[in-house]
Length: 525
Image 1 (cartoon, rainbow, N blue to C red):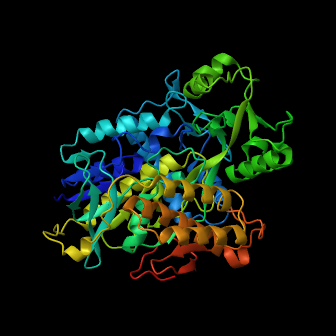
Image 2: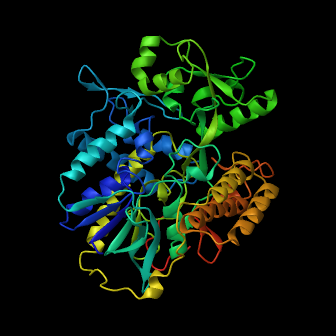
Image 3: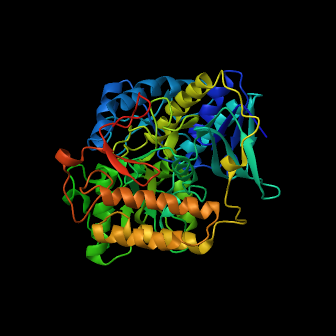
């Protein structure tokens, strides 16, 4: 099988890239592991940050993003995000995205570490779902875009130093199929599922990151994993994300003794950066011997809560919590990867023919810690840029008619990912490569992963393990604490030695680089 361009993933980055490629007149095939609508984007509640309010400016959005990134943001990437983001959000509205309004005017809300009310929401707390709906409607109008759901991509095809296709699992007969194209755009999302506790859906297993690394692309900043401070913590309930916006609207955090504790940890209290709040919650849970802390929204009017957070209100009520009358038990959970496949500002990776956008990629825009609600904007902006670059770069290329078997050699393991492998990796990641890390915990994690690696593994299991190893290796390499990465044995930030990005290469080498973006080939650090 062949097409012009292949896109892996149908979240905000993948859909926006597909639309952009289709504008060039090329055929696009979008492969998704589950149904077309299923992605991290669909579950995004917090909203999308954009400097459109009358009292806001892109420079202020830029400053907030750089401050949250703890000294590792790529300033040029941040500038692209906040400046281009304005036009892409306006374009999305023109395509039919319905963000919340009052009196015909857009409503902007406040979230942690933002200096202005600049967060747009849709239907209160269903922003991601509305964006996916609007983009799917727009993409479906393009005759040259074909969707292939329930087709899990398991490996990339590389021929003569260029990525020219994928191997995916046929949804009907479960056999591996080959799909060739001029280029591949990875928009497969993050890898929260490698942790025991996560807000991410089942599909977020990091396959795109693992496939890119295995194929020869460089990975960047994999040690920086953001843990969302407030995931629902009720036995039998999913780790449902309780949006940052709840604290932005006045919610406070209390420990098991009923004490409000965040003012002791940071001057901005509940509106401190996510890494600070997550570590504070972990510390309070350890100090009090409790399994959770509590998000208290009881000072707010019930009608406001039902209107502002309809999905959260109903979900909590389903599990026995009335958020208007009682505090909500919460604890941190793995949420977002700042690191990923190293790209330039147009989504190009260090492997010819391979592009990446969204959470699977690392442009340097988030630095060591993502600013709340910047991820949807990143997917929109850099998805469009990756699609445009791929179409332009590949305009004169031909799809390889035949690829030698050596280029598509694969481990033909059948069936789903081994449950035992997945369970073991997730537990090790949570216990040893989690919110607080140390040399001893990280080395022990890597030793366990080495044992697992010796077993015959399916594609899915090996991809899952590879991402875990990438995170653990980078976390062991970085001997400081910065942003979302905290080392108990190196608790201070060290700008003199470690104001560098970690770059991992297929030979296992990790090097430090002052920048993510690259403009020369081969890459020079």
